[in-house]
Length: 188
Image (cartoon, rainbow, N blue to C red):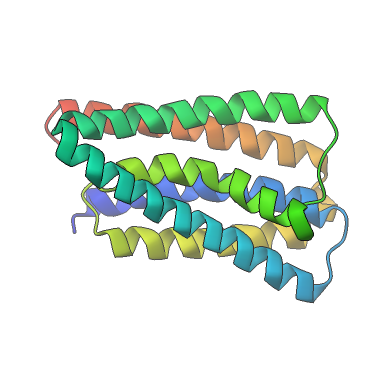
């Protein structure tokens, strides 16, 4: 694996981690017991990795169906997910919130933060890194982001939660556009 591919995986994992961090900060602001932190971390990490894997499967099928265009479709999906995240972060700041710490709220939170992983998974096969390296990196960053967000959520407050989700969207858009530019130039 090339250093360039490793950097791509790190950028993707960090952009996913920002979304996980944003939700975790919001949950952490309410105060979360240690046992519940483990459950939240496991749910968020499992959702991120599972959706990335599902997206990779869909991306592989699309690659066989449409050939070399599939990479560009994946990168467009990445940018599209980033745009969606920006819109959702604006929408969520206007409305109330859901308790993401237990029950259906935890399930919905895990699924909602992993939708971007579905788009990432669609394009992850085209960035030149082995899938297992990508999944392990995404899992590590998701678990770390959850832990960090829950731990310092009370201190940071709602402003960081909202800006982290916006930054995650911006990074995904730039990542999708950057990967497409690298592929067009023959370097990706």
